[in-house]
Image (cartoon, rainbow, N blue to C red; front, side, top):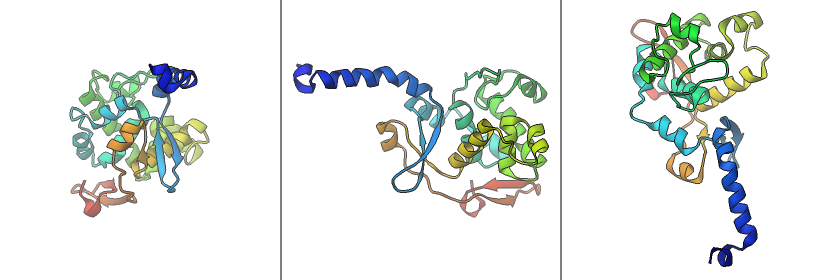
Length: 217
């Protein structure tokens, strides 16, 4: 019956696509430009989307504790781990915000795979990097990937393809690129507004980066 409706060639095509799905799911986040000129984030699968929108993960609380825009923290988590709290890189980085063992130890993160501990450590580290680079978020993001020493040696974003691509992806996510995964994800995720980040100060006079209107997160 199926063969009569689809034909043999269509069936072969369906099976070929299904065979590729695991590879697509493992692919990293990529950025392109859609027909309307908007930046598009590819390869966010349904599992990653569910993790990103999960009510059990609350980066906003830790972001606000460190005077960080939650949107920036969420963008970094998306690029680092795809919201997989069990993520482990080939270099040993662990959890949602991919903390290296020595960094986790310095930040007193006992269990890097615990979402709450990982978020506390990662946001604390990101805050320290933003302060270290005088509020220049692009340098802080580069330092999160390549290390602050590399940023200081090169007096800017290091000329590493991986780091430059990482900074580009994080900032695109932060500034409101469309998220595109499967057709279902496209239908379910409304296009976020594109707001230009700006700096303000909190009650403790620390620099805060935000895209929120009126300074409200």
